[in-house]
Length: 156
Figure 1 (cartoon, helix red, strand yellow):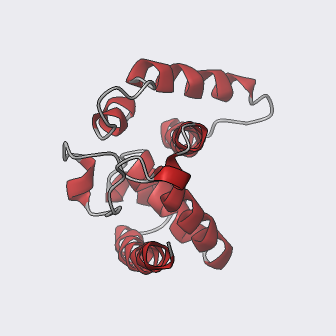
Figure 2 (cartoon, rainbow, N blue to C red; figure 1 turned 60 degrees about the vertical axis):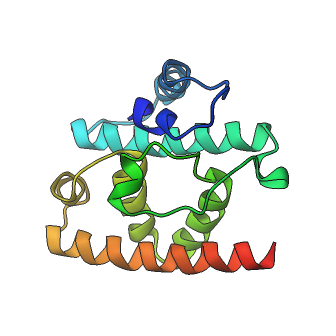
C-alpha cells in the first residue's frame, strides 16, 4: 500500500514508503483498546492511518497553500497504478471529511479501496455488505467527491 502511494509523490519528496509504513506502524501499536477482528479489520485501520499520515505530510509541506504541482484527484482505479504527479491529499481529505458527515459508510469504502487498496470483495467482507452495495457506494462516493473537488478547484 505504501509503495503504491509513494509512486504518486513528486521527485524529491521526503516521505518514503518505508517511512510511511513505520509511521503507520507506530500509530497502530499505540492503539491499546482495539480488538482486531481479522486481517481486513487491521487493513481498514491501516488505511485510515495511512490517509492521516499522507495528509499530515502534505499539510506540513504547505501543499494546500502553494499547490506544489498537485494534480486533480481521480478516484478511478487507474490512479492506483499511474506514475503521474502526486494527488492533492489535503483537498481529498477535506472532501472525505465532508463525505463522512453525509455518509460515513461511503467514506469507509473510499478509505479501504483508495488508501487501503482493498478489492470490492475484500471491502464488502470487511464492512459485512454485498459486493453490489460496495460498488454502488464506490460509484456514488467517487461522483460526490469529484463534484466537491471540482468545486474547490474553481473556488481557489
